[in-house]
Image (cartoon, rainbow, N blue to C red; front, side):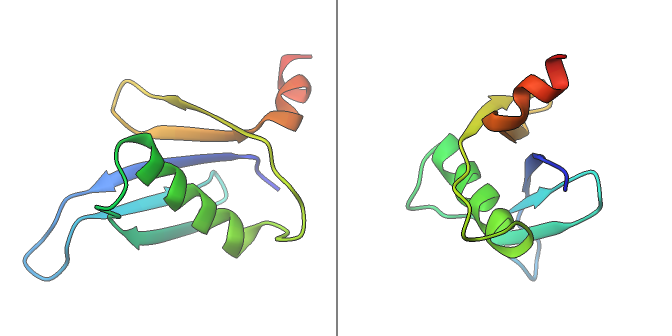
Length: 87
């Protein structure tokens, strides 16, 4: 299971409103309508949580940490696995 989720903003089109797409390196993805009731990174976290609900074990508790890439996308990683990547 890939423990890194990237979330990017998708602009509105003629047929769809703005959306957020969460995806991983295994080509799994979840797209949600942009949650205008949320601001900034909270909106992106909501998309990451929807991805986790669909693809990860829902009964586990995840300690997510986040960062922002130069292209404006957010990344979320399960903090419990950070040590695996640093060693």
